[in-house]
Amino acid sequence: MRDAAVEVRGLAYSYPDGSLALRRVDLAIEPGERVALLGPNGAGKTTLVLHLNGILVPGAGEIRIGGMPVTKENLKEIRRRVGVVFQDPDDQLFMPTVRDDVAFGPANLGLRGDDLDEAVRTALGAVGMSGAAGRPPHHLSFGQRRRVALATVLAMDPQILVLDEPTSNLDPAARRDLADILVTLPVTAIVVTHDLPYALELCPRSVILNDGVVVADGPTRDVLADTDLLAANRLELPFGFDPTRV
Amino acid sequence: MSGGHAHGLYRPGHSAVHRLAPQVKVAATLAFVVAVVATPRTAFWAFGVDAAVVVAVAVAAGVPLGLLARRLVVEVPFVAFALFLPLVGQAPHTDVLGLSLSVPGLWGAWNILVKGTLGVAATTLLATTTSVSELLCGLDRLRVPRAFTAIAGFMVRYAEVITGELRRMRIARLSRGYDGRWLWQGRAVAASAGTLFIRSFERGERIHVAMLSRGFSGELPPAAGERAGRRPWLVAAVPAVVAALAAAAAIAGVGS
Figure 1: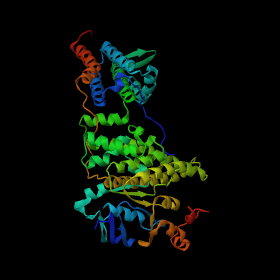
Figure 2 (figure 1 turned 30 degrees about the vertical axis):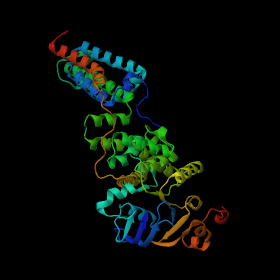
Figure 3 (figure 1 turned 135 degrees about the vertical axis):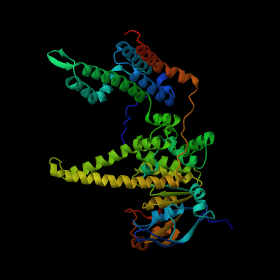
Figure 4 (figure 1 turned 90 degrees about the vertical axis):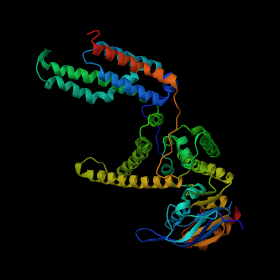
């Protein structure tokens, strides 16, 4: 049997101040799946994401990425396999030029010279930002910075792409551009979002996390059609939006 | 949209000076400044040679001399200090327009003025023809410790993000009827500064997490950039060599 792309078993985590962020999370994602991770603010979504690449260490339970346990010895390979695009591109883009920033990840993996240039070129090409290689990140628009942030992760050739609130602060056109890019990427993807129509468009499957546990897991259309479920988890479709008629 | 379009002092161009490798330009500027500083203050003609070199490089770089002159304004505080020296210097004194001025003070003022102006002009030319990222790359190539260039890089990268936050906080204060006119209203400004510090600190942590997520293990990847080759080094050495020869000649007593 093939290993699951992501396998989370019995994951629990509390913050140093004692507040419980994740009670017990069980989740398996198959290779090539695109899954939306939904839930109200403070549900533990970002905490879960930071466990997938070993930034946070579980209080209990275990995580496997493509069969490999997330442990200290495996961190380098785990972080190559799991690419996280954070919510604020200004947190992710810190080098003087776009090129340097996209090269940061693959250079950490040991790529040098032509291989490194090739990784940078391919990643920028995939997000349609090849022309911006020499520019400083702060001279780009917000939508462009979000795309470059995606490229910095794609340059590491990840198997699993995790996007934290990819549409926040984007105008509709930039939101559309990003969706067009995401559907072309041949990776397993986890999209953390409050943007339910976006989840429906991109992700056949949705998981709702609330108060540190998975409270729903199923086809996105069914999850979004269950108004009681949404209401119980402080989620709401945009006015007039009917997921069964899209 | 945050993030303005300020390019700092850099003025893009395609001149030979712009195209020189940044490490070469940094080293050449430093050598030129050292030569200027080493020139005896009495050797007026040597400073004339140095000034001619600066003008020649500016012309070769296509930098308008008016722009260069305007950018020398940063020097004003130092000039003000220099002008003060003749008034407080020691004897002997000389009378100029009814003022009793110290002769050593006058020499001191001249020394600061001429060397400062030439130094600022040379570094301004460097900054006008070299982008910040190129400068950092050049410093890396010159084996400046990676930690220093990385800190400088972060500073440049986040200066605009933080001033953007500051601007938004100020607008938010103004929008709530705060006019910041009286001293006791400084409390709000101080609170904003504290908030900004905490936010920047938290941003620093988030950046670190984002770096770790991309495989950062405590060591920044080696600097990019290419070796410059011999020709650019020879070309770029010309201004510094001219200035050094002038200084050497002046020290040896030629023309004095």
